Image (cartoon, rainbow, N blue to C red; front, side):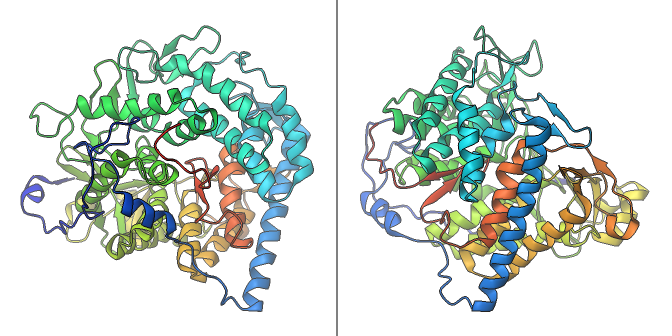
Length: 549
């Protein structure tokens, strides 16, 4: 724990805005078109950004490098088919497969979360027979049959709606768009609340919403703020602004009801929005701000929706700019071993803790920094990626823990506050394993993919390959892949696979997709032509936005 009070006043800080200010003109338009001070995007800057490219030119790749890369892509594709065939054999059309029990699992209303989430992976890997078979399943889905479960609105959006939209844009088959609209319209009653903030849970039969913690109005930052990309694109395809306005209203309400200059506000540091939120008052209910679980995709969507909007949503980039500056100033720390890690900020206190979800930051930050031309923030992305990868690279399994705690440089109290077993791990690895398991999550692979595509440096692709090899040794079982309970043990050495029977849909949608895209031809889903949602669903940048739907 570290008090930030003095830092708020005296810390050395590069006050240069993330995006330099330019002359702007007031505008009246759809939600998010104006910055918080009422200004619209500068036309000249928008025009320049639309012409800008970020992906590295790989024309200097040698024949040997190409051969190795494509061999690796083929290995990943075979691994996906191995997992897909296990799913098809024992759980086709189910939300998930229990690989070890060889049984289907209903976790997302029984609408086939794995199948829908993986549609774009099937297409991009050129598994067209599997794709069209899945398409026929999608065409028959009845979203009013809830599988005996409440729908988690956030997850339904990112996994199902995002998957359907991406499948539509890749294949141009209108059944996917029709199903995306059908499902989103079923979700919209979740927004029928006094302030227009969405309930976490929804009974899709009755339209009744609720918080996950029944009897309360509690929610979190990521769950209310991660509709922007999918709803913006849905408004474009349907020419119906209702979806976009619903997603943008969340930001409006949040900003109107919380002010860091208010001494009674839980919102303390401008741009570092607390995780816990009350949807009836529109106020933050706790002071803990974090870019990991509970906050991650909120910040991701501020930046990526701006790109998707053809750089027209000025409020999004305005908020992102403030957030990333405060993140750089208050939410990162150097560890005692020299790596840079994100941390957990609670009011004016800093906690040297990072979960694996924070590993999305280097990729998204690298992308935006490259687009803007900010060398200092791109360097921050590179440094954070080094820290994130060190967690994987330090483990015998080559896989990273779900969460770690580290000791900051020149803050010895961090060490002495640890329990003895954690100190032993810090002495050995440079950090302690707070949650030592790996559940096939994609975030570090995602950021390594981004950095490889942005810089052309083969070391990032080699690191992805190392993680894939670790998954082969520790997560591959009969008929698929599962989590591993302890990343500090390598099954190839111990001879024991300590498995966790968890294979969520994101494994097929995100982990496998980023693995494959690292090694396939670099013009496949180019970063200059596509933007990935938080569930790795690529959405095309070819749809021009002029400020109207």
